[in-house]
Length: 333
Image 1 (cartoon, rainbow, N blue to C red):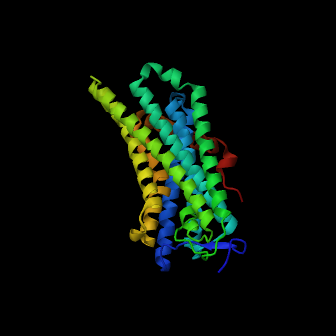
Image 2 (image 1 turned 90 degrees about the vertical axis):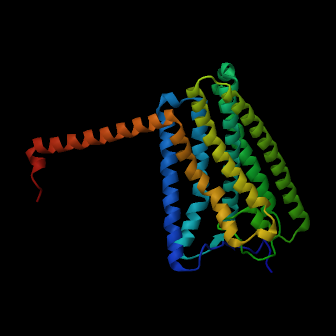
Image 3 (image 1 turned 120 degrees about the vertical axis):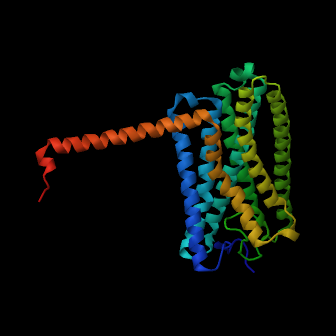
């Protein structure tokens, strides 16, 4: 048996043993990561360049895209490397860094989703106070609090987990370094209880946030149902329901991953659930928000149109210049 002082690497769980399936998983993860990078990059560019999106929701959406990019870049590249080179290893320090950044971005994303819920609550239930409650300084403070919460949560859990002596081998039943699976390798009962206590406190805080979200959406839907204009009610629902769908997928899969009973736990189920809350939401968030946010769709359409027109103008200018200049028109020998 080994302990944490002698461990130099961990063994991650492979998706499949057959080489063909490993390559298939590599291309699947590559497509998902490229789609997430492209979509979140477009949202970042649109929010930064279009002054119509310089609103509290646009600011929080920009921060959400940053957390999505961080989540994708933390877990997916190492998994793709293992798929491509048919390996399952990750270094001890690499595992600690992956666990830290994963919990950092996930905790920050959860905090931002709560803030966006509060933004929708104020916009619909207290529209006259929207400019006061969600001014530029208040938005900056809330975003800073979300990032600070993610950092402190990740630091506490990572430091507590990787300070435990590990004597149950080095095989993790997950495709990335997830703290509950690392705890299974611990041989320190007191340290294990300490980390379980931290997880319990985190779960209680998350449950309190969930109660706040439920209360906020109850108030939102009551206010929406009182809107006399059908178009206004439709617009309010179109902005709230995508946020509720993203939040439900994120919270339900993450909670099930951490709290599922051991009797139904299996490697294949763990892989599916972990992919649903660590890989799918970062790729779906920009798609859901861009499809249901008319201002964001208009900004993306305008930005892509301008880029296409500029590229066409540059190509036309280059071609016209080469035709007018006989030295450029003739081939060089």
